[in-house]
Amino acid sequence: MLGIDLGSNTLRAVVMNEALEKLEEYEFIIAAAKNLSQSKVIGNEAIQRLKNALKELSKKHDLSKALAVATAAFRKAENTNLIFKELKKEFDISFRLISAQTEAKLSVLGMQSGLLALNLHQEFGFCDLGGASCELSFRGNYLSFDFGIISFYESFQTTTNKAFKPLPYFKTKDKKLQIHTLIKDKKLKSLAFRTFEEVKNIKKSLKKQKMKRIVLNSGVPTSLAAFKLGLSYENYDAKKINGTRICAKEFLYFALKLWHMKEDEARFWVGKMRKNYLVAGALLLFALFDKEELIVIDEGLREGVCVAYYKGLF
Image 1 (cartoon, rainbow, N blue to C red):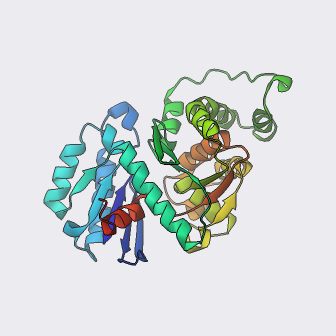
Image 2 (cartoon, rainbow, N blue to C red):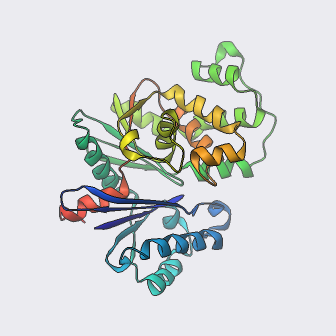
């Protein structure tokens, strides 16, 4: 089964057999959510990147038999139906636009598959921070929040940045003190402080559930895990990053490191068109988590689609 996850930033595909073993994996940068907040449509450049990705996949796979789903950016875009009709005509592929709750459920199935492969059976919460939405799942509850790394960063870019006046040191919390101390760049500091407002609702839900262990599976934590292991974007290996433990403060250090990288170096480590979005995502996760045990799993929606298919759930 070829499972395809068309997300707000990437198209990710996987081939799995009935034993739920991954045989092939693919990832393409699409950036579907880029400028979506302003234009309300998926842009022509993103559509062309999507078509290029499908052309590559069609060289080895019959796309008419793929189980393909699309998520947040395509739920929001006004031209989604037109795009899907065009793709059906050109590639004979049928995309299903799934709800936020279905997205969360399928993503959890994928993450659980990854945990089982690592023989991890404890109780976990699950957090999937995408380009245009963030899903939090725990004990059978599935919540979706209307922010993502692309939508958040672009919102920051388009708002008028007034001179930022941080609170005095003695009135701030420890995390804000770290930002004061470590971040000298004014734009990055302003971006970092804005994350606390962005995550306040999801943070309330997280604290209410008192989850001690959280699985993270989206591009920000997997990129951080790969960077920690010295894996470039081209040499990314899910088997090596699966099970990586990280702590909240590492997201801040990753954001700082990436922000100050030259473009060529950043492209080597995290790929094209991802640097600033990953910085924004790392700061969001730094603001969101505190003392939780965080574990990185590469498996997610694309694997969840295949798992659901073989279990007769989708």
